[in-house]
Amino acid sequence: MLIDFHTHTTASDGALTPAEMLGRAAAAGIGLLAITDHDTVRGYRAAQAISSDYPEVHLVPGIEYSCRWSATTIHIVGLGMDCDHPAMVEGLAVLDAARIERGEKIAQRLERRGFEGALAGAVAEAGESQLGRPHFSAWMVAQGHVRDHNEAFDKYLGQGKPGDVKAFWPELAEVVQWIAQAGGVAVIAHPLKYSFTRMKLRRLVKDFVAAGGQAMEVLSGRQTPDQSHRLQRLADEFGLQVSAGSDFHRDGPFNPDLGVELGRLQAATGVWQRWLDDKHGNRQ
Image 1 (cartoon, rainbow, N blue to C red):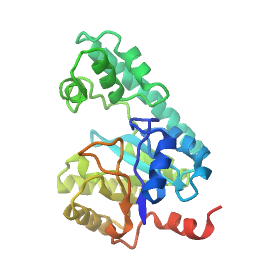
Image 2: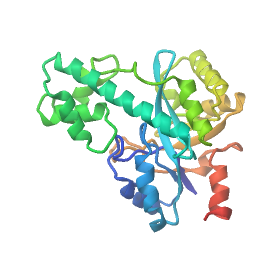
Image 3: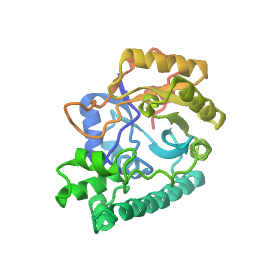
Image 4: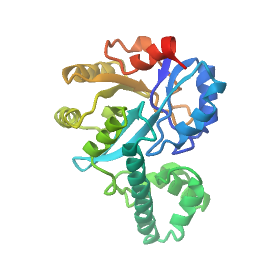
């Protein structure tokens, strides 16, 4: 069986609409799917509205929150939350405001470098999606300021560049509590992507557990078996459940496909088990 607990749609920075994502998941044979757009559940809600058209896919509520830990932007996936719970409503409002403020700051920095109209252009590119750096990149490409998205990030938007604004995210512990209070499971997303030392990664996991976090992705996108085994050992050490997902954004020669085979995850503490049981026994 295939699962995927980390995917993105046009509600944030993905290329597929929620409907297209569901259709792709059904065609791929994915039995459990979470749409985890950045700082919004609009993608999940849109998919939920038409999920009855794809009965073979069990749709799990999901989100990927941005937060701060040790002066670093960390991503925490939330799974199975009540999206109408007051804690989720509060959290989404905080992140909406943070993204607007961050977008304004990015635009100010770009405009100081001669890119007038950056905010309006990025907002237009975003449409109904959550405003983010990819929308500034798309506007810069469309205006001819840069050749492509890689140049936009390499020169202006990537890590350490003028448009790399992190200061507006909530703290990790606060985000974990929003998810927990809404009845969901908080998951550390792609732990190796932060390029932490072994000691710093252990500190992150320790603080995450102390805040109420319950799970960690041991497989995310294109990852080697050795990397997954290393993360599995870390999860076991801290008593965490494990999760997995493609982190799918769009098709491409170097991008992962949707879906992870459960057979690749030799773990007795899989976060997917609660929804697997529901799919086979208690689905309404």
